[in-house]
Amino acid sequence: MMSSVAFEGATQRNKPDLKIGSLVYAKVVAANKDVEPELSCVHKNGKANGLQPLDGGYLIPCSLGLSRKLLGGSKPLPITEPLFKHFKLFELCVGMNGRVWINSDNTKHTLCIALYISKCEFLPEKELMPLLKDIVKRVESSV
Image (cartoon, rainbow, N blue to C red; front, side, top):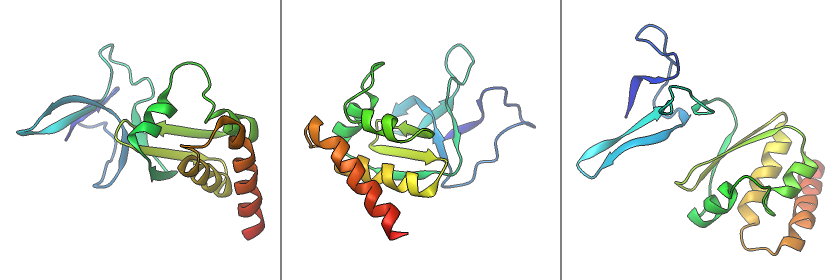
């Protein structure tokens, strides 16, 4: 459940138009087994800091372990390094619920990133870049 003013700068008149099934990058404010969870797109400081409705893109499921690996920390992870080297513009939103939202400047790139993320979890670091190159080659040749 989201309040109509759970967004930065939102008022009763000025709020995002969300429909059932809309994707939102949010944080859980309250969760209880007897009540629906409450979500918010505003941090304690009143700023969104990236929390927002997600438009376009592609949503894929992944394991909770892979979600944690992708969230990693401030340094680039071995899983994401090949992506940063190969693609210039793309966005990833990783949820602790095992969902990854991918958006890029090109549908083929989005597909390549989605395939790569879904296949890379248990591969050793040295096999990640060859996997990405193989996926890109197959996607480029099939379309």
